[in-house]
Image (tube, rainbow, N blue to C red; front, side):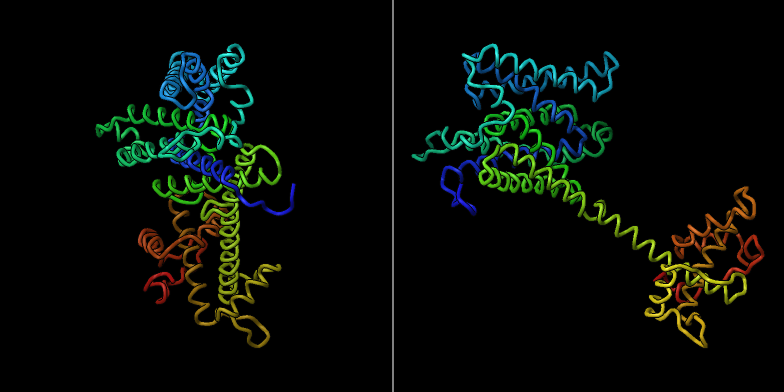
Length: 429
């Protein structure tokens, strides 16, 4: 094997293109499966269609042909029916029923492949891993051009999925996020679900020959699950899932080519790596975003606690101030912000810092006053919850608390409640 990335010849280019169109179709269908929390059913269908495919081939169908598609859809509907029957009739949990249905049907398909090996153009390794590396050699003639059969079937399925989603998009969104309301509004939710099962079966069959069961499952679930972490609109999720699937197909195939390993397996590994990366960097829900948000909150609380501590020290109701490295850093940061200054060898609040500190103390004492009036807590139990809540109370809540408790009476400890500063009467800033 030569060093460096080899030049992509037409055969490899066709293999990559085939993987990409299959990935795009699976990503679009998978986006609906993921938002409707039907990912496990998609996994089940991608395995359970095998006996339908095998029986259709035995009956004379060609892999990827109409009869095989029909057999796969029938197997998909049978999987859903068995799952529903086990759940409703036998009282089995839905996930357990799905697991029983798809493992049984998949095992039946493997048995049929083994039993009719001489009459079925399938084998167990093809079922699991596909033959993506050989996709370019199985061609059909289109306007004088030799085009891989897998690419043609995957492309036609992709077009069909796009058209079907475009025609039923509003109903799909309604049924995905509020099926009960959609059903009450007359939306045929059951038909949409059946159509989604059929689309899952068809995309599975389109990718089975080139991708195998392992990769088809990954393409149905992982790109959509990754996209769900990154965007919050369904149409963006569907588009991004298709794009992620296509990129993973190209990158995974090239990596498998270089490492001389299974293309389907490497594409699935790339998809898994992309999901882990999304878990880390996703805005809002990502691990790094949560860590940064928690750190930012802790930093804000440390600065506000330092302001409140200095205000109470000046008031004479607390002494010593906050201690520790974080308090020391908070003091230096507040100095840069112009809220604290050093005078006569002591730290003291500036006018801006006093305004901020009074708002924090006011929130704290208003909440203590409200708890003292409405919750049966000992006096020494009022401080801890107020110390946490003081950092999360806005001007509107402070006004409602003041109106309810009558701030002139002070807090339950007899301490005065600072007035709302002019800066915050104009709005929290």
